[in-house]
Image (cartoon, rainbow, N blue to C red; front, side, top):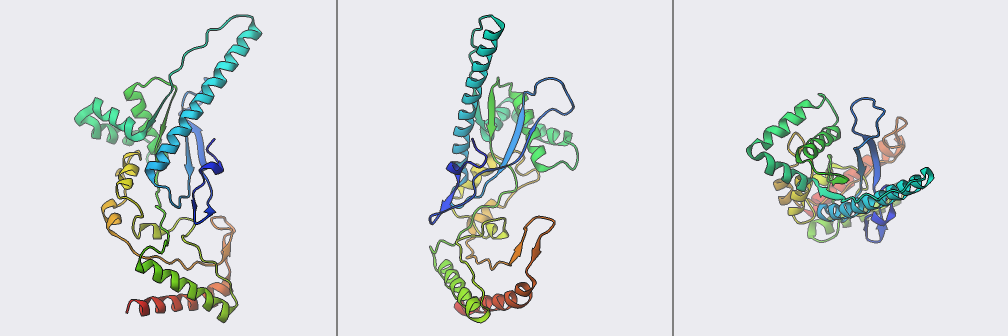
Length: 293
């Protein structure tokens, strides 16, 4: 329903970007068992261009609700069919599926524990194997809260996991962005006329970039939505939300030329990197200085 589904692909200026991609799926048993698993954990990578945490969380909730409904329908149909093969009648069990955001689950746990909530978090995280992946630590927190709250299944918990790179695009909405857009166009002309290279201009970098932290494009309360729905926020993962809300730095990413990013065959095109790119970078820096002089 979610993995690779183009229905949930974000878009900007008529261009669609990759939808959710599952990065990991696993059950939550800590040792081998011949029993059927009762809990599972999955997380996805998602490239956003316009969508903010509140909208994403709402979509995830609807997807989880539909997934639970389909699972129950399939289970009921299988149970009835199996009973028919065995020659006995079966009364369909009534299920009451629940979908919670992590913020809602955390609120229930805090209500139960009161002042002991922070200690519960620290103790739970301390029990996770040292050096474990941040995503595994987050799953342990969710599982501990589900146990504490004793919420009957079937249920699903939706939320966010680190790291978070908020999208930051050049929308041409202020003087700084218009200047960067102008300089990008000039750099493309310089590359073509001087080096015979064709540069493509895009509104934002379609990957992981520190430019995400040059300011937050959206209502600052959206960062609170993310923080409230990320297991372990502040232990140790955090972002300086207040600072991001205050920043609004115009961005321009002059990219390299290469192949096979993030693979063991990753490489750059040396003639471009050594001869063309430095000259274009000098051109861009000089033009920025001239515009802001």
